[in-house]
Each structure stands twice: as structure tokens, then as C-alpha cells.
Length: 308
Ligand SMILES: NC(=O)c1ccc[n+]([C@@H]2O[C@H](COP(=O)([O-])OP(=O)(O)OC[C@H]3O[C@@H](n4cnc5c(N)ncnc54)[C@H](OP(=O)(O)O)[C@@H]3O)[C@@H](O)[C@H]2O)c1
Image 1 (tube, rainbow, N blue to C red):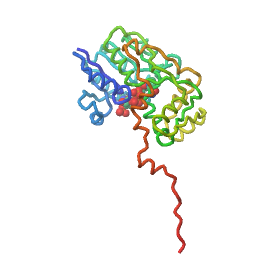
Image 2: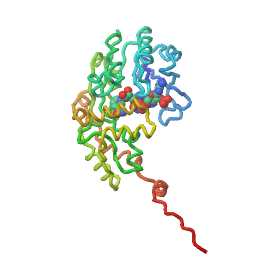
Image 3: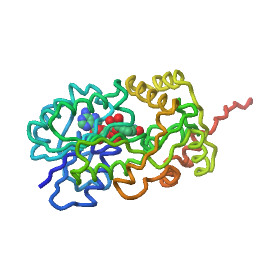
Image 4: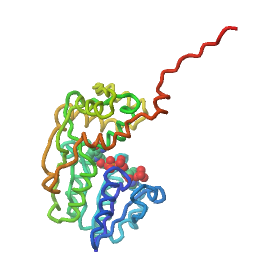
């Protein structure tokens, strides 16, 4: 009997992985979603009937119960959990102690080269463990466009990232989930690492044009400098580490380090990854202004008092 524990199970990749595993329903496999708030997780469409356990990286008291009987882990490190030696490594030590036999770790493109990334430190830590791992390094998620960048596109008709003319290869998290599941089901992927990309890279002028064509209104790529971008995000009260990580990723894109395209996804799954234009079409409602939005965005005329 396999028991698979998924951390970050309500996030982008975790939720897709959970849904995929439940739809496949592999024989002899129990799947458990490790979540911070079970009642909130139960309300998420499509996972109402999943098995949940209470788990928080920063609450070591939750580790033992979550790990009970677990044979494999899908480790997704939340962006907020950056002190990995305090909150990830002790969890991995426990996993090793109870005899977890395999971990699929979702890292990020370029993590092996960037010491500053928390995922780099986590990847390195696996070398000290006896548990076999599969390290996946996906390129940027298409879902960033429906979350991180949604507000800019919807309310300001712009894509505001400091990526210059650099190309970015986006991947859909549902495709990352498919590779995670393949890695869980097939021991041949143990002790290997894979960079995962979508089918094709684009610069943000091209991406803005895709949005304009799909939405029927002009979406501009503003190409801010890194300093301007950082200042804006900090004014928006975003966490410093998060802003630094984003800036590093877009600087990497600017200098041509995010444009790699490979056929790893195809060789593992036997079919092509989803493409960006189809993604934008599928999720177009996210960036469509409702009548109410349009009303709120209208410039207000000053009311003049009529003189009596
Ligand atoms: N964004 C990208 O383009 C990209 C690309 C490649 C790789 N990555 C990597 O992907 C990872 C993030 O994955 P994601 O985008 O799927 O995550 P996400 O959507 O940001 O979701 C984070 C998940 O972690 C949970 N969580 C937050 N704090 C927690 C804590 N203290 N203890 C336990 N669980 C906690 C959240 O649960 P709640 O529902 O309770 O908040 C949620 O399920 C990062 O390591 C990032 O480096 C990102």
C-alpha cells in the first residue's frame, strides 16, 4: 500500500496534483492532502471528498501525525516558507526517520545555479538524506498570469514586469502535476532531476499581443526597470524577499536564461505540453472587465453646484 502526502495541496501545483491523483484513483494508493486549514480546504471545488491532515511547516508539532504511514511525499515549498533550515529540513529529517521511501520535490528553473533561492538550499539538502528524490524544476507557471499579474492586466491593461526583451517559457501547473504523478508511479525517475518547460518561449511584447487579441482590448507591456518594479511592489506592501525573488527571476528572463525549451515533458508523458495562447483563451474570464469594473474605472466627473 502506498500513502502519498502532498504539501502545499491547496496551491497552484499541489491542487492540480491532488485533483489528478483523485481522478486517476490508482489502485493501492492512498492520497493525503497536508493543509493548514482542513475546513477551508474542504470547500475547494473538486477536492471536497479528499483525505486531509492538518499540517504546517512552521508548526513542527504537526509533522508526526501528517507523516504517519507515509511512503512518498510531494514536497511543495510555499514561497512564504523561506527559512528552510528551520522549517523544511527538520520535516525531511522526520520523513527519513519514519522510512519515507521517495520524495518528489517541486523546485524552480535555475535553482541549481542560484544559491540565493530557498529551493537551491532545499535541493542541496537532499544530497545529505538517504531518501531517493526526484527534483522537478519547472519554468514559470502560466497560472502567474491569473494570479500575480491578474490585477495589472484586468485593471490597468498592462503587463508590468522587468523582463526587457527577454523570452520566457511558461508551463501550465496541470502539466507539472502530470510529471509529478508520473514520478510517483514510476521508480525509474528516482534520483533524477528534470527541467520542465512549456512548448515555446515568448517575450512580453508577444504575450501582451496574445492578450490583446484574445480580450479585444489593448494590453501593453510596460517593460519597467528593475528598480521601478521593486519600488512599486514594495509600495503595494509585498514582502521584500518575494519582491527580490521575482526581480531575480525576471532579470534572468531579461538576460536570456528563461527561454530554454526542452522535450522532457513529452518524453515523460508522451504528449505535448499546453500552450500559452490556449491557456489565455481558457482563462479569458479572469481578465474580462465586468460592467461593475468598467463603472468603477470610469473617470469621475466633478459635480458642479448649480448657482441659484
Ligand atoms: N510561480 C512560479 O512561476 C513558479 C515556477 C516554478 C516553481 N515555483 C515554485 O513553486 C512553489 C510554490 O508552489 P505553488 O505556486 O503551487 O504554491 P502556492 O500556489 O503559492 O500555494 C502555497 C501552498 O502552500 C501552503 N502553505 C503556505 N504556508 C504554509 C505553511 N506555513 N505550512 C504549510 N503549508 C503552507 C498554502 O496553503 P494555504 O491554502 O493554507 O495558504 C498553499 O497550499 C515555490 O517553491 C516556487 O519556488 C514557482
